[in-house]
Length: 317
Image (cartoon, rainbow, N blue to C red; front, side, top):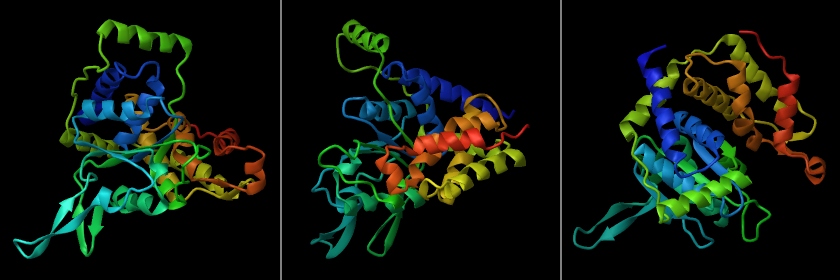
């Protein structure tokens, strides 16, 4: 195993430890966020208010040492409020570009589904191509750039469903979930002990090192049999009779990238079928659209992926 990949695991563990100072009892969620970051992907949290989605994003930004910006999505938010705009300079007699908050390493798009689709769509180019086009000029975003978005379930009042094209650009979709009684008691105990709301988080890395870690993931070996296992999982989403729209090729790309990151986080330089299984639901389920009759019955896309994972033969490598 190369020194670069060993460093990925070590730094990842250090980041996880720092974040767990703030986020109690959610080590599996924290690990999955790290996998997403190492895969250079965008992340969507869907959960009810008050479950530490925003806090987790803030804490990761501190631990990563990355430039962090937050945009609170509201019904009156305009695309230019995110991307920036050209402003006329009367003294110079010309327009100059004023960057918006999207020009950062880590953008928190808070309650993204509170904004109308036109504003949500302003993120599309940035999420996929890491750039923003204003007028006829294209502006590159700093590296690394990724969006961590939070949304409330669409049944909540005042929310707009994310367009399929945008949903497909999120590498992972996950939820934080409620803490159990023991973890919630620990949250209160730690708050009493520190006598303040804020938790001190040590900066573990910096943007250049994050990019280096993302690059190192490319050295993780994927056996052809494991690669075909990924292809088979994604292909079956398009053949399942309960599914109206299956996963796009972005789903298989996400499965590849996140499986490699998961392997590196676990101290290996090769991907196993278990790595693929561990990320399959997070990477693929949100890309599916179920047929209306199955939506009415309450079927979830997570269940479809679980069924597919049970059905697809696991390769021996």
